[in-house]
Image 1 (tube, helix red, strand yellow):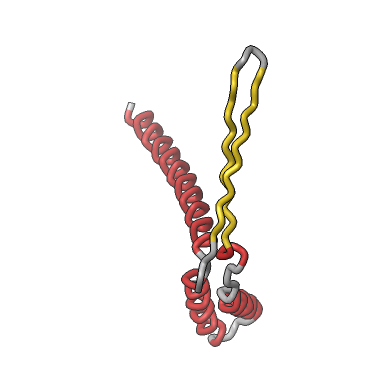
Image 2 (cartoon, one colour):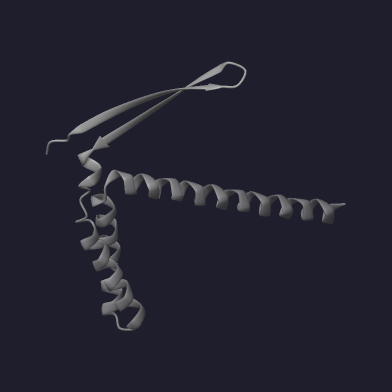
Length: 120
């Protein structure tokens, strides 16, 4: 696979009142890699979603086996996903984890305050 990238450098000089000059530099990169993002990772993802729907509608034991297959398909889909999607998911997971840790710490501090009030 050949990746073709072109870079366009645009420089603009703007003069503001009181003789202040500001130079705006804009760099734009055009890459064919972004345009041809592989979407075959959607196949196991759609399979996992369909199996998840089947799991919700069924109460048989086959549903539990299907749910294991759905989890495997979902993980396989994440492995096949392009790096842009993986990076986006990583950022979302880190933000959610940080928020949950803050909530947990606030609950712990409230519990320790209640214990110190009971001791006094």
